[in-house]
Length: 455
Ligand code: UD1
Ligand code: CA
Image (cartoon, rainbow, N blue to C red; front, side, top):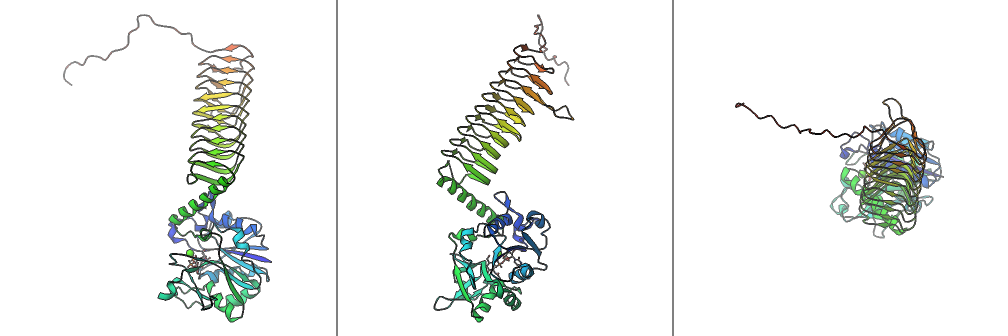
């Protein structure tokens, strides 16, 4: 049986924020959420989060039938924190301790720690170990204790092997060891790290493992560290995509805040952000500085720079942008073109149809092979309700047309430029509403009045 306890009661003072530290976001999700997901990958029998004062929003954020939340108040150290979780744990097997502010730890690394009947520490060697608990070993290299930075003497401070804080403890011993912890130390806290000495006294084996990458153990204590961890995370995501064969113009200028699934020969230019679930089909190319959220794009579609697409399904061989905005509920069929400064919302655009310049298309069903001219506006909102517009196949809409919904433009109709369509337009005919053009003969432009006197 595996218990996992995530310690997350720390105050996070150095974040200078009203939000509990573990709710600050990495790649769009709370730090704690990352740790919870990793923990779940190990299929624990019990999953426990210890949170503290100011953790108001925390229970809401880490909801889940499988999570037991335990409040630690006051916060008297890591040993005291783990003790709060004890009543909720199974009595045998292994208890794995994770930190809510160490979000990059990999499940594969944790799996290597799960050795029965022994205390296993995760340690790393750092060039600058300042601030961390040091791993003290005897002449044979056997671990003898952990000394906290604040309690260490000068020679102990030179030890470069540090305690990452992540450890696996035989659950059967836990109650006994935690009850024997004292707080006679520089911080007057109950240090979980002191169980090393107790384990050795009791004849239990103490060993250590190292993570595959040191960065897995990076902690977040400040906004600076949060930004560093974010970059590290994003670089990893980019590397994974590169390994799958995605072309990324600059792996240090891409942000994936969710799931990005790519087909073959996908190209992504600089500065793109992917949120939620995004799927890019074979040979899709994404121009510079696009933001895509919950979008599915079929093969061979080209996004030119600066497109913002949210909640849409895009067909194959489409061409979008530059500067297009596509909003939720939109479906583009194959070969549709959406051009610059065109906004499409909750609409279906049929195969081969085009809206290439400066238009708003909302709550509209557009058929196949339709041309929507520059400056066309669908007036879908009457100030109280939204109405639908239907534009059937083969329609040509001249520039600067307004379509006042609800309205239908029948198959093959042509709407003259500048028309305000308020009634259904019949199939195959020209519809126009336009004041007849007149010219005023002899008309003179006004001129400025001559200024008289000295004002
Ligand atoms: C701890 C370790 C230290 C290790 C370092 C790694 C101890 C005594 N020291 O030190 O050996 O090198 O982490 O970063 O364990 N927490 C609680 N309740 C508390 C105190 C802490 O839940 O009362 C949580 C924090 O939210 C955090 C984790 O425990 O997730 C570590 O706490 P922190 O104060 O950062 O410990 P350090 O002093 O850095
Ligand atoms: Ca810390």
